[in-house]
Length: 411
Image (cartoon, rainbow, N blue to C red):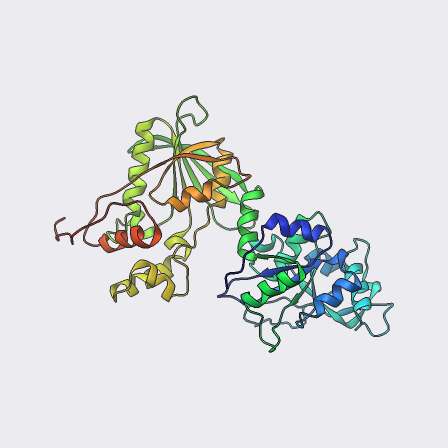
């Protein structure tokens, strides 16, 4: 059964109304689903329903709240696999035992008050605070951060209750189980992956940190280095000419970093060729931009890409190698690149790519950036990248010509 996910906007609106939503994480992470609701909306009825999930009832809070309430980590050395940041469990001081749904509701709602103090609570208790990272899912792709993000995005206090959902057998509820629960109780269901993508497009995360003229073999570009909020990456834009001048939509290349292809002229891929072809095509056109994103190996990183190379030498193709390492065929995200193009003043572009999925990523609803043409950028095939290119065409949908026969060594 394929579970149909709701949109992030639908989930945020449900949170705003005080409803519970289900949030699932990646199947290669916890592979679980949590009930989540805004802390200030956690009525006794809502808490009682969330407890039916049979996991641990927790409350995600930000560092400033943890500091104000003097909540400390439950252990000095957190060696849990996913580093879930459990803090001192508490109950509201007026509770008899703290275990009832009503008492837990009072504890949770008080934690969501900007006026709560350390004296409002006793410890230990039955509600487990979790310390969420500032920046939310953009810094840690966990339910702890997703819960705070959803409450904040709903315009509520950035604190949220959450509880893992178990199946009748006591195991983690499967995607199918969660889908059935969502239908039965009319709950919205989204993924953390959706939430990350939504935030990377809907929130302004980029700012210019440095800019200078950059003469190249292809002409005089301007180089702009960007900071990305909550992240260490420094994407780069290479701009040629006046992007806002009248005329056809500018040529744009969204290029993911490739150390082997871009820097040392590897023959195993077409990345380096495409980088230089794009710079040449943009310069000859008279205006355009190349955005260089640090997304090595289609998002899996340099070391994993080299491991994938070794697997390819054993007979796997590029997609099979990624899957064997536990990754999707393509892990890249273009949200930051979209924000850079908007910062450059663009609203219509002609995209230099053979990958139609890039075009789909750009033509996002609600994001004022439209691809008016997909311009091919096909490099010469060699014996080392022939199978790689065939796989991109056959399995990843790239618009590349078919290669009918093996290339000779001198091709």
